[in-house]
Length: 101
Image 1 (cartoon, rainbow, N blue to C red):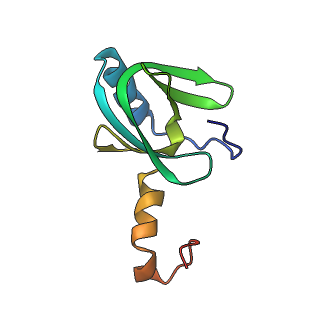
Image 2 (cartoon, helix red, strand yellow):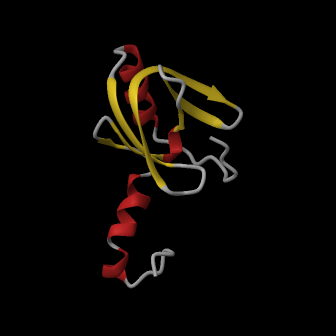
């Protein structure tokens, strides 16, 4: 992925959770915001959690890579992007225009 937006801080507890899932070589699905800011998903086995100049990235055994601050759910657990995703579902309740109108 080629993200142009700034990396947002990620809760250290979530980073620790990711480390534990990588250590266990957990398999499953990750929902995330892709570089076009659309909801996307990947499925596979976690192989690494890498920290680069651009931030943390979860690496999958199939070669896919997901930026940690864009994760909506990781194996069913809410990630850093979940609150933003949830706000799209509740936008009509708050009369807030998040680009959905």
